[in-house]
Length: 232
Image (cartoon, rainbow, N blue to C red):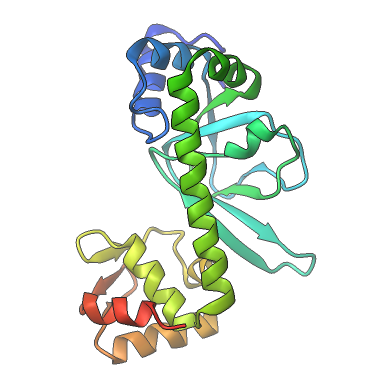
């Protein structure tokens, strides 16, 4: 990790990473500079735990490069992926509640993060209403996302969940699968197991809605996939 007061080149990198996020991107430059000057750089290899559920963690994290996932795990080893975070995204917003973390976060590939301590954020929130408003917006977005996830897991069949996942992740009509995006990983994102996921992929493919290969999933019939996603 770097020092809490980065050198000019590192400060520029921290500002760029913070500015790329929806949370900090619209802040004034002086406030962004203040945040960046307190940010600490951290690097992790693939498959490293950043923090465990049930442990205290006092930092908010900004992803500069790489991907991580937040998850809940059961005693028998089953996992439910709650979210995947990539460049320009922020995680551990619950840090401001000053409670132990409720999820674990693990890296999916090598990552670079910028970390902001809760105490510093609290000071800035008290002094800068624009930061408080931005944080409220991010928290509201997170609540909406988690509410939709609960609805999916509780009410929608596997094929509908998979259709919604594909639609949400597709860019220009396709998902280019990163090395870590295995069948097992995709299964944890929709609350199932690889065998069931494979059957759902085959069903959507046979219906002419998607085309699947090892490296990508292409959307063939977006309207049909959208209709399948609404089934409950």
